[in-house]
Length: 390
Ligand SMILES: Cc1ncc(COP(=O)(O)O)c(C=O)c1O
Image (tube, rainbow, N blue to C red; front, side, top):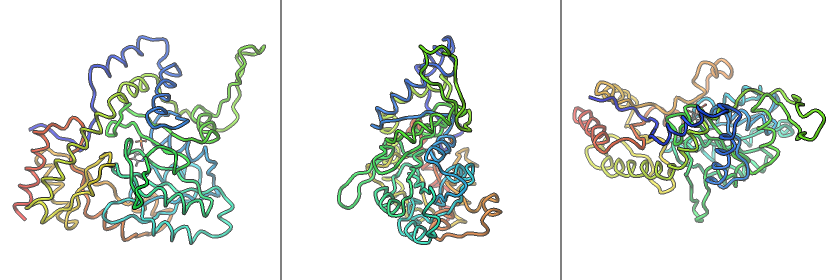
C-alpha cells in the first residue's frame, strides 16, 4: 500500500524544464528569475511590492525587521501557529505575547486580542509593536477587526499568510478581506515550502503596499548592502553595507520553479477546494458525524490543511496511530507555541483555553492537489474502519 502523506508538492515536466534552463544559464542566483517571480507575485496578489527570500521564516524576519521591530518591541501572536511566526520576533529580541484562538477554527480570537491590547502598558505604546494574525489552514481571520484594534494602539499588522494564498474572508456586512492584498495589513508573508500552495523547495516572500517596509526588507535580505545606481560614476563597483542584514536570498533555480508553479495556482486552489468539498459531504454523515467535526466550509478558504476535530484527545491520538498503521500520514497542527520548551523557559507556564481545546482534538488529514480520488477514498475508508471499533 502506497504511503499517503498529509501534503506534498505537485511537480510536472514544465517545472523541471524551467529549472534546467536556469541550470544552463549564467546565473544560478542574483539573476533575472527572482525579479521576474516578484513581478508575478505582485500581479497575482495585486500588491505594490514583493520581496522574495529564502523561506517563510526569513520573510517574517525581514517583515518584522523592515517595520523596525527591536528589543523594546512587543509582538502579539496567536498561540496556534507554526513557531516561526513568534520566533522571528525573538530574532530581533522583541517580547512575544500569545493571544488565544477560537476553539472551533484555531483562528485568532478578536476578543482575546482586545484583552491583550488593553493590558499593554502605556510606556510600551511608545515603541514599535505589532500583531501577527495567521491565516491558518487556508482561512483568513477577521483582519479588518484586527487592524482596527491594532490602529487604536498604533500597532503594525503583519499577516502570516503561509497557508492562505488565494483565500478571502467576508464579514457580516459583506465586506471582503483578501489574504496577502496588503489592504488590511501593513505586510503579509508567504512560504514556498513543498507542503504549501506554491513550491520552490524552500522559499518565501514578503508582500506589502508600503515602500519603506519593502525597501528596508529588500536591503536586509542581502546583508544590508546598498548599491547606489552608479553606472556612470567613476566607481561603478561601489557598494556599502548600511544595515546588519542576512543572506536570505532566493536562488534563481528556486525562483524559476516558483514562476512555473504560480501559473498553476488557480488550478491548485480548485483541486484543493474540490477535495475539501468531497470530505465535507462524506464526513458530515454518520458514522463520522458521531465522532468528528469538519472544518467550517466556506468559499474563501484556500484549504492548505483539512483539519478535523475529534470528540477528545484519546480518540484523536488513536486515530493518528491507526492512520499510520495503514500507511497514511496525518499531523497535529499545531501544538500551542507556548508549550515548546524554548517558550516555557522564556515565559513560564501558559494555558490559553481556546488553544488548548483546539490542539487536543485536531488532526490534519491528507489534502494536496495530486491526492487522487482513489487515495482520498482510502483515507475516508480508513477513518470509517477506525471509527467502526469505537
Ligand atoms: C504558519 C507558518 N508560518 C511560517 C512558516 C515558516 O515557513 P518556512 O518553513 O518556509 O520557513 C510556516 C511553515 O511551516 C508556517 O506554516
